[in-house]
Image 1: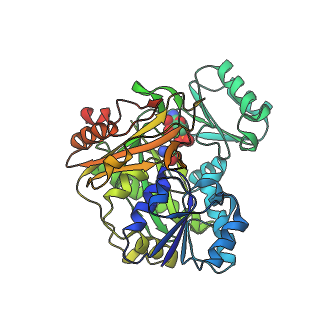
Image 2: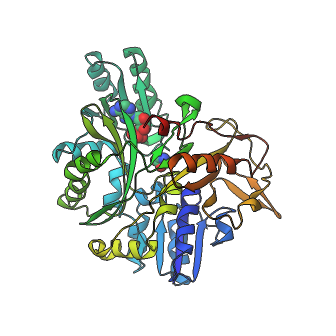
Image 3: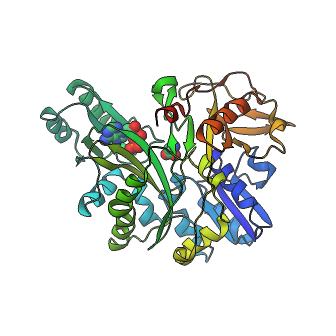
Length: 423
Ligand code: AMP
Ligand code: GLY
């Protein structure tokens, strides 16, 4: 079969790597892809938001399955556009992708269906938000309602900071129309865990857990980023935590969406915080995490195409989802200056060192071909992933492999997975 993947990051490279392992797949296309994806797929110069072109390409090339990796096209309704033309596509329709697309929607859903999350209020009006803050306890969390590249969350320690935050989100529109509405919620403490799951509208099967490192610098200092590294599984995601989440969060979310007439098919990513009062949902995403996908997918034993088709056909209950009994760590190699300002177009050397190395992956996040060279083309450049029998071994392997590649401006965190030692 012929598969089209929509997206261009490390997540899409990890998805493409899994798809390439399926014996059922003859040909992979990626729109728009990157230099690494181009080694296993044919990249086509169509942007992820160019819906008409994607649909036309899928029709002309008789694509059997389109996999949408990114949040923007999902929230914008790309799945609906493909389905209208009778094309098979993996991901939630627009009316279900709102689970990620609107934080106000997801908070209201959790409240209505008693799914554990932080206490909150939604606001359309900045004056009302400020009046509410006058009587609130601090720290407090402000969230732009819509998609904001993971940056629309402000943790405010004082009333002054929070007032500035409301101004920046709702009046100055620092995150564009994402800030037309805002959620103000209780500040929670605890460890964060990412749990990704496959969903077919009724049945949910969770994948192995992972933990991301969102801050740019060691010791969780610096600005929030898309993610600087991950490890899987999380030793803090115990059997007891899993039991709680199965009872109160996972199936409850799928059932809530169905009850609202918003049947969810695709990936639900549960961003959880393990608070002293038990697990709480921090956020939902309607797609694989990036870089969570880079540590979770290499450990999945199943044929990803079979699992995705089961989701589309409502037959996920027939799938026995299995993960390897090992661990993986991903260290992101970024361009120094990310997430603010950084150079692009720098030559990447040593990529060939990954060829034929079992259990090692060099996922491309921001790269492109420049003549016969591969150059940097984004803030997050590569995701170096390694497996190991234990988390400690996987981490040592991943850091060793970060030395195999080089580019001017190469920057990474040196404490990815440090928390493992505290477990
Ligand atoms: P989100 O995009 O909602 O996951 O938020 C980004 C990050 O902000 C999370 O990964 C947390 O580290 C932090 N955060 C979000 N909501 C809260 C909260 N209610 N309490 C404490 N930290 C939070
Ligand atoms: N790594 C977090 C995300 O993909 O949203």
